[in-house]
Length: 254
Length: 199
Image (tube, rainbow over all chains, first blue to last red; front, side, top):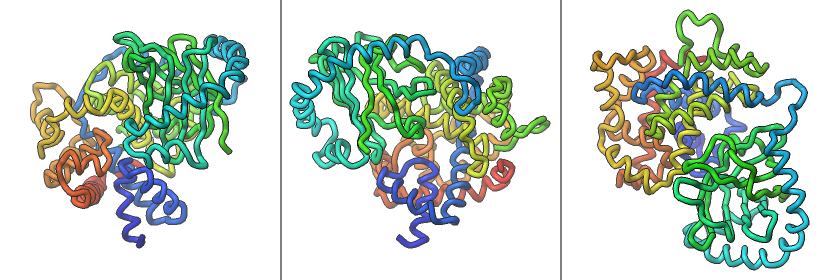
């Protein structure tokens, strides 16, 4: 690409509308190009100014209190205070993880391999094309987590494709959440409140194969220690409202 | 995103105090930007209850990650708007693309979002106080040719990729890319006075 062509990417980059491939290429270019970095900065301000184009709306008075209540619950990252004891549900989650560890070891290597292979085979219809599926599920920058309950079923497996910024979620033997409820996945990193990875539901067979975009905040964490699944009201919750039904530890691919 | 007049402390100082865990600073930041963030969230998610969730999430994220704010990369207002937009787009993506396309077929017109904004501004009976920033931004958008404005609004308020916008507008991808780029260039020129105050 010529310098001119690179600069044409600055505005769509600032709007966040480049394709993942274009974005990666442009970010690699940005590292060494002052002119493009300056353009990105100014277009980021232009894009952010578009927020003022939203039709005026008055937030409810109680919203300020909710914002502050949330802040009092979670401490800022990097604040120098002694670490607080983990949230009660995290402790319960840790216990569940320990209890599940034995079970994971036994079945993880057996039936699940075949199950995942079957999932991969049918994932074409979900992901579009073979190549898209392969790109999501393979590559040097892909992490995997298996989520297990205390019994054999249900279970889930999640592939985190960092390069494409997608989670690919496979769930098995997980009864569909009832009307008005949904399943929600949580990224659990040490020292952070759980971050929502997104919501999904299973079909009548208790299965799901979904692709979720990776939230910027999760991507910024770099590595997630654990992943949990809870049932929440439709649309998901800002924080988990129950002890995870399924929980697993991410494995590093690197 | 200029700092409001008579502001005793610059925005960046508020963020610094947030890093130190001072929740009063977050309250001050909310007083400055809460309305903008809520209006943005509502414009994207359309449901007041969802918009409130987005506001709580966005300020929560700003609070937790205050230490990562980098003043050399942009203003506090731009940082907050970027976080809020990202959370709001996550919300509508979670709802599913099909429902969204249905809900928003109305946006397909060349008028885009600028029409309701202009209407709101010209109706003093609504009692909506429009800041200088709002006036400048809606004027700048109104100055763009309709197709450029529509493409930029689809990108910003719906988070559609350039190829999705092309599909939605039934235009060639190259045309859409040019419209967005040209429109953003014009906006940058028109919004110069506003953006200089942001640094």
